Length: 194
Length: 426
Image (cartoon, rainbow over all chains, first blue to last red; front, side, top):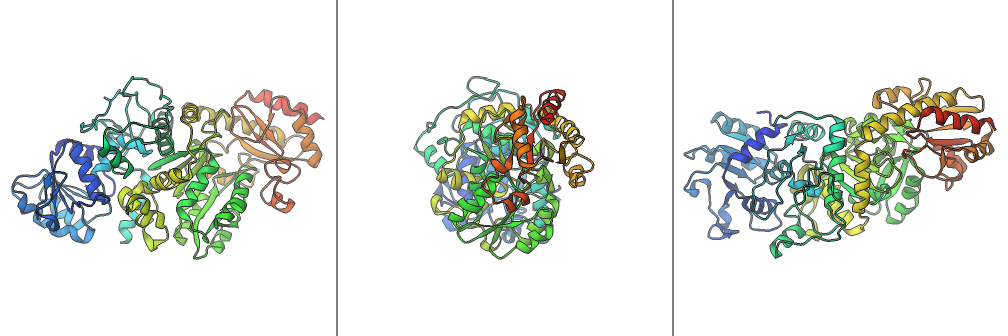
């Protein structure tokens, strides 16, 4: 997979197929991006599992924290890593010990570890880096358009009026790759420099 | 669902707009409401805390305006946009995110006269100091860079003479200085030039001009290219530092490559207040649907009118980048191959008096202070838009006493030429 620019169909396929998501680094602090994303994905019907050893014994929006991926005790479809790039590899290595393996490993906005991605992909796991699943869900459903964001999708269909907790259709016509050409180039230049 | 790239005209009609979920209305409804009901207290808290997508209050966002924002973001190739009350409002909101009192920004000397005033006087009172550079001398931008420089501002096609700016060369200076390049793309519209493709980090427009296109509604817009990294060096604390207004959120960390557009909305528009009326957003959106058709006709007419003027004995010179003899013709071929725009100047052998006489005799061209209308417009900048500048500054910005500016409309070109011919006959 070219991790500089994801085709929309790749992201769409992931968000349409996974049901359970373990979020590593989920925070109970309600101004942290991980809290936003956890809450949003839970409201859109994903089975969310907060993973953070610092908060075991507490819960996040009614879901109990677990200390590590191994403590989840049931199969998970996707692991969403809310950690800096330098902390990605150990999480991926732990994920590779799970049985069954997760189908997807997702690294948050700002996080990228190409070596870890290669390891996961060698084991047949799909990888997304430097993206936010909340933003991508909002974009492909066009819900994010409320904020003036370019969803880079079109549709002439009448959508249902959105209600709380509803799953939204992500099957709109895409207008090009996973990102705008200019912002993709900028991200690529940045990753090449670092 | 194929991942194919629709053309510009398809985006001009469709981007951002889908049938209304509630009524099925196909045209974008005018959501003429100040406020939006929350589902419950938690929903309200999520919206106020920027945790959920949705509407709160029309000063912060409105569904009609959101369609306009996504439409222009798509046409410019940006990640997001924010619509505001005017082009001037767009400039205030953009610079508020970038400059602290005592900071500097570099601006091209050839700008709309209103922008020159805003930068020189209004922004000075905020402690934002403009440093002028000459867009025909790229090195003058390099020389203007200091440790306090926070941005560079240029026009793609510059008012009033329709000169073409070398966006790529200036974007190289901006990248080297570690500051964003802001391009006012009003006179080109994304149909002619997409500044983001040439290295712009932020694009602003007066929507009042060619995008709206019909001279009936004011509006402005800010487009985020999603290309600039706001986190380096703590230079842009509005984006990189925890915001006390939002309980410590860091906007770049939270919103990634559209954080600048969000900052403009939740720190700029929310607190400064220049919101766009949803009715105006509707009018401008309707205009944008025909942008490609109109813009091509504007350019074709402008070229014909410029060629006529260039051959007229009463005319001393014509500044239109679409003419092969023009000093900006090379840049026009590179940046605006479909046409060099429809705003340009010419000078009369009879000087100031001849300019005043011409304007008074024209029957189809309207004498007013706007550009980018379906109607052809004429103005004498020295006595109007640029009258606050001293004579030397007038000449430097291309608005000398003998100069007349045209904004060529989409009428039949034969009629426009006949009108100019009778007015020049004296």
